Image (tube, rainbow, N blue to C red; front, side):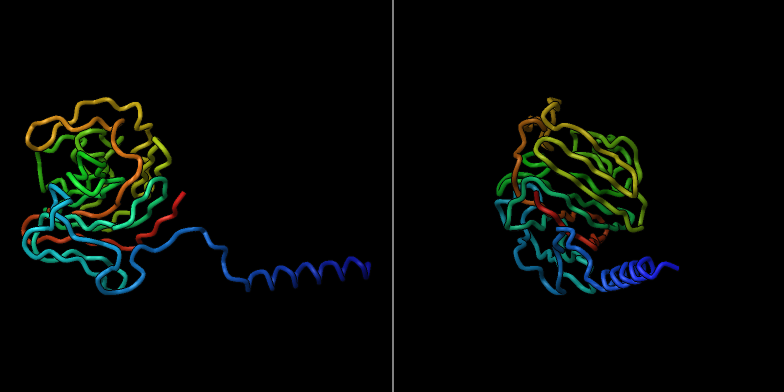
Length: 230
């Protein structure tokens, strides 16, 4: 065998070996709940108007890496920081009458479902009369998911990508939203029947967060939440 060829193979193998010992490249994601306890940089607000404190005694804490709601229903758990373009990944689990939501680009006042955006997360048993846009994966009362892939009482994996006016939502390995928000002029009605701004006019930057509106003392569980900005 050619000595030069043998030497080259040895060098290549050693290079591959030492490369494998290096730490994995940073993928740009930052965990949202890196420590157990009450997360810093988050606030609990009223479910219908986030400029107001939540009523009762709701709480959100992290234990063993899982964020769980507790206490009274009817609140949002929101970041103090605002986000515009980002990729957000997490998993969620609800009870039989669970009702939650993911706030996207919500302002610091008003209802995230109508003044920002809310991706609905709700067990179908919570409201058996719900319209498609009010079911899990829908942009609440505005844009229905392309299919229903929610797994009752199991962990559901979510990936949301927002870039300018484009949004893509994947759930449990299926793309259920892939649209240009600027094209959506549909009339969206608030709970009191008044008109909310159409999706095309909603903010392009704001807070993110999770809701608990579950019945029967049900709570919301979130794990693996991480975000990549830009």
